[in-house]
Amino acid sequence: MKDANNLPQRVVLVGGTSAIALATVHRWLDRRADLEVVLAARPSPARAAAADALRHAGARVTEADLDLAGADTAREQLGAVFAGGDDIDVVLVAAGVLGDQEAAWQDVDVALLLGQVNYTGAVLAGVLAAQRLRGQGHGALVLLSSVAGERVRRSNFAYGASKAGADAFYLGLAEAVRDYGVQVMVVRPGFVRTPMTHGLSEAPLAQDPSQVAAAIIDGLAAHQRIVWSPAAMRWVMSALRHVPYPVFRRLPI
Image 1: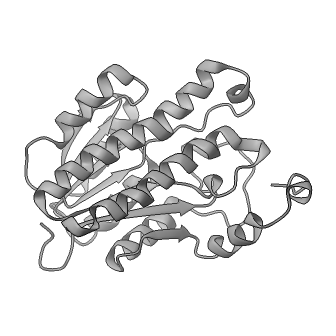
Image 2: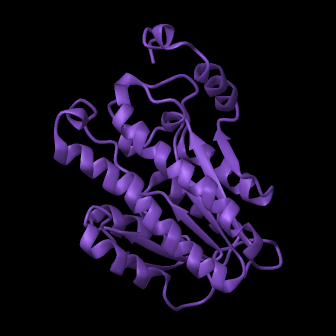
């Protein structure tokens, strides 16, 4: 249950090494140092470093093994994440892979990995998290989506398609659980400077993880259904959605 200042007391990060998810938690820690955080991710130096940084900031951290690429084990691992413990105030689903976009339409294994992590994994996390939050009668579920799913482009259509599927599922899930006291919010960032995008050319309106984190926290407080980050991306994508394909394919995006 959130505290008297409407701050979460227990947060689960699905994709616990996500720069955006971690930036969000650190913003909460600035206001509540004893936040309980569950980092669900593959065991790695990045997860260990994230856990150490959170502990140094005052958080109580639990590390949970999770590999969404492993279809046979992911359900069991996520089930363990959502079982037991104190009530969960926020579940932030931030796991995702960008992949090799040229390989993704020519190599079956690469394409299926994108779908497994970005779509199937997000759906699995969403269903199990919603079950837990619905049983509690409160809590928020946040999907870190992408503007890439709003209208897929030739340059990254495999990634965009996987994000589009998860985005649509969570918007429907929001309607399914809203009468149970559960908030579901979809966040659509543009280009964000993170390890995942390192080495890529920056797109217009590029941001740092802290800027997206601020939009997530503000969106939760305002009970928004969809959050664009930055806010101007809403109007950019609204325009691009209606550009005819013969023109769209020639745009430098």
